[in-house]
Length: 213
Length: 213
Image (tube, rainbow over all chains, first blue to last red; front, side, top):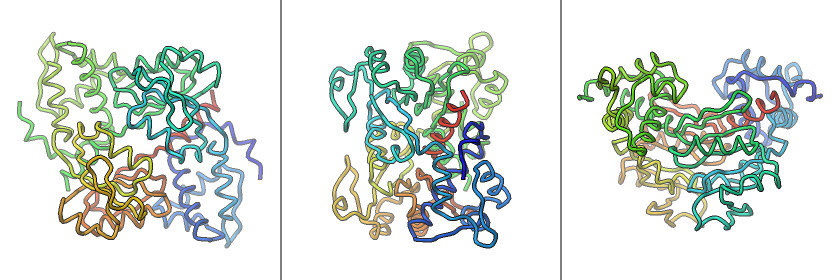
């Protein structure tokens, strides 16, 4: 099993959404002590077409055995490595309100390759304090923190009206990816990776569909 | 300005993603003391085609004035009401780990119409305690809690291997919507509203795109 040849592939977004579902399901199987799973088995459990699953898994260099299927621990290992979850990606939190704090405390993120090395705030009452092992620095210290840790991902959990400004500051300091948790639509240059986790948009979806039911 | 006639419209998902962006931007303008905004102005700020914005806003019964545009506070009010953010939607948290706790503490959610009325866990050390004003009950008490508060939205922040089981329990108790924060792909009956906030899928996207850059 060799993963190195496929690591650079730019995967389509829908595939990147589905692969973590497969991983979560397979980890559930592992916890139950199961040994093998077929793409038909994954298909039934997750309501995803089995040909789609075979296609998604074809990006990985892993083969299932006829009649037996995939070895669950090998498949979990391969998926996790392929998705980048086995490598540490250094990140800083911008804004240590309730969400920012929760992300620092969430041990789950470390299991998915995210290592939070620093945090920023502008509130003098929190600057200088630690959340878990993470020191909260004043935003004006960004260059110093960046040089020390060389972080890559800027996680934006500030109030929406300063989201753009803070993202701009992070990019200027050298961050290569912006993970935006605010409802504000942050704009970034083309060479910067951007992901939006739109909690409030999901609420809007839930409310709208509830009304229809 | 009448909103009642449009409240029942099932909006397309992309529209439901964009409308909260407009709202966040308009609230930023309000904070800056601005009075009016045109769809061209929103378009420039958010990189969304202005004809798309006009189309999205046509779902609301609000008209901009020629040359002046929309009154920002009226538009913010109308958008917020239209998206359901002005109404209280009762919710319970399932799983009071770091993310579950953070969602209870996040005052932001209340501004977006989400009222967390209860929480569940299976850990005897947290059952009976309060997080902010929210009592943590044992999952076996779900029917009692449901009868007391009549909540609608079940927010799933348990470990992924029990996500399906907990969602099934919530639906059986009478919850009408599942908001799934786990990477597990939860299945629900057709009459149940489902939203996934896939934090880990967004990490996979960030890592994949970083590799490509």
